[in-house]
Length: 217
Ligand code: E4P
Image 1 (spheres, rainbow, N blue to C red):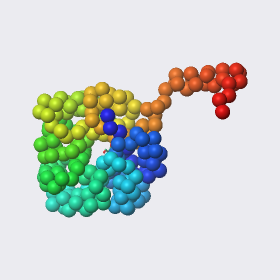
Image 2 (tube, rainbow, N blue to C red):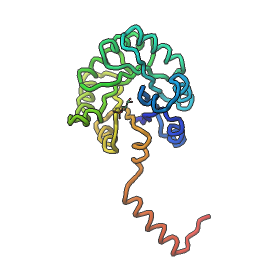
Image 3 (tube, rainbow, N blue to C red):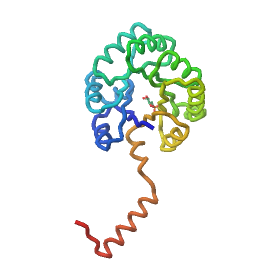
Image 4 (tube, rainbow, N blue to C red):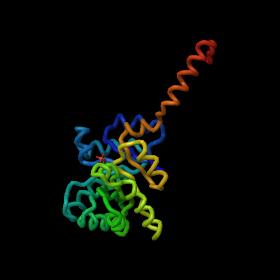
């Protein structure tokens, strides 16, 4: 499973990237707003920092304006994935921009039929939003499973990018289903390392090491 970081915070991306666990980055207009930075400037910095795909989202709503914005975003760096919303115009822009050889991340996916359309329009990634479905008492993970089944039935190469991940269980559940990628905020990625038995076990080992006078360097 590839790990993308869902943030435009350079310091947070850097810290995780130094660990070698970052396969890409996703941003959206809300995350750019949170960073307080100019979209072109911060996206360029992120794209230079990480080797993998960096998703940058258009803000236009009609296909021709989305295409113009997508081309401008893609010109920032070779590893930009143009992020397009799953609307009819977004699908048209997806078809045009993917045919030009750009990576496309189709975002705001909330149904298996939407995911099917995105794959047929040539999307590189489809982003089903797990957390936002859970928020309204639906089952985000069921959507990941449905898309996996449909894509496997027909051999679509579009990668399932499990998005809107809020909990560590979202990560392991999406991995069990076989999502190709997950994108999560840095805080959730860091929590993946935590376990109370690790903390308790380490505390005991350190206590014993001290009382036994164990010194290594
Ligand atoms: C993904 O590409 C989105 O940026 C993100 O995962 C949305 O997450 P949220 O629903 O927690 O805002």
